[in-house]
Structures are given as structure tokens and as C-alpha cells.
Length: 208
Image (cartoon, rainbow, N blue to C red; front, side, top):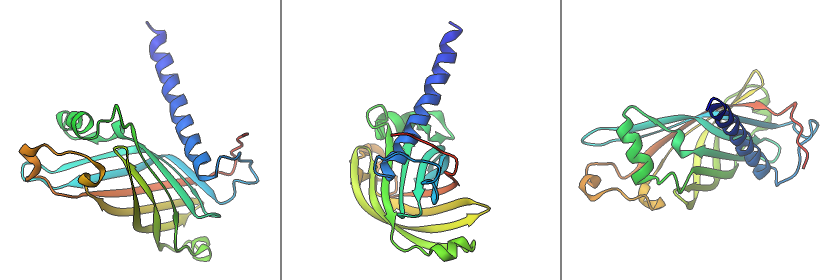
């Protein structure tokens, strides 16, 4: 019995590593990374993502600090992967409804984004100057993929890349059904906030 928790922790750690590795390979086109090739590439698996929606009865908000992300400044590509069950609510009942009734997280375990930066000033970033960016790509939620364009901020501080964005999505666009009983009391859109700090992939070596 004592061995089971240890095995479970090991499996969770392995899962997080494989998930992050998948994101890296997704952005880099499936190739391996050597320490020499890693210049300009940043990643994290502890990104902060939160969402908020107004409601007459009670506002709906939750956050996660388990967003895996990888960004390649050389190709200006980036990818995110967020485990749906990692979102934390103030009320456990609301969290249960979110996973079971709305997001069906056993079936659709994660949300992902894969895209690229449209406007990027490398020289300004190197000087530590914050800049506004526009990102375009495919956002997948609840098994539905939509092409989206999002504006945000990008800044480099002491070698760490700071990325932030705020945008809205409509649950109906992703086939997320809101029960008729509460449909009129909940906003039609959900505000999503992204705030992540990515570290450089300077020492990583992965063989294909």
C-alpha cells in the first residue's frame, strides 16, 4: 500500500515531463534539440492562466498554474497546453460542475494553442523594452479548434521571458453547453488571462 503513492507521484512527474516534451516537439517540428540549437527558445510548465465570467447568481472564476508553454523567438512560434482539471475554484461544487457538466474533462483533458507572433521586434526585446504583440493560431477547447487572433505583451527580464495576454471566448463557439436553467444568468463570453514566465532552454539536450 505504501508503494502506491510513490508510484502515483512518479507517474504524475513522468506525465508532466512527457506533456512538456510534446509541446517542445510540436513547436520545433518534431526534431531533437541540442544545447547549441536551444538559443532563442523558452519554456515553462508552471504558467498562470485564469478565467472570469459574470453571473447574476455568482461570478465564475478559476485559475491554474500548470500551463505548459514553449516559445521559439527564432521562428516566432509558440504553443500552450493546459490540463483542464488543474483549474482551481473557490467552491469545490463549482469545480465539479465545471469538469463534469461543462468541460467534460475526462473526455477532453486539455486545451491547447499553437500559433505564431505576427509582429516582433527582436532588438527591442534584447534591450529589455516591453512590447505589444499580436499572436495568431489555433485554439482548441472542448475538442473544438478555432483560429484566433490575440494581442498581448512580451518582455525580457534577466533572461526570463514574460508573456501576458487577455482575450475572450464564447463557450457556445466550442460546443460547451450551458444548462437552460442558468443560461440567461451567465455572460455569453468568458475572459481569459495569461501571465507566464518562460526560462531559456540553454542546457536542454533531447535526442530524437
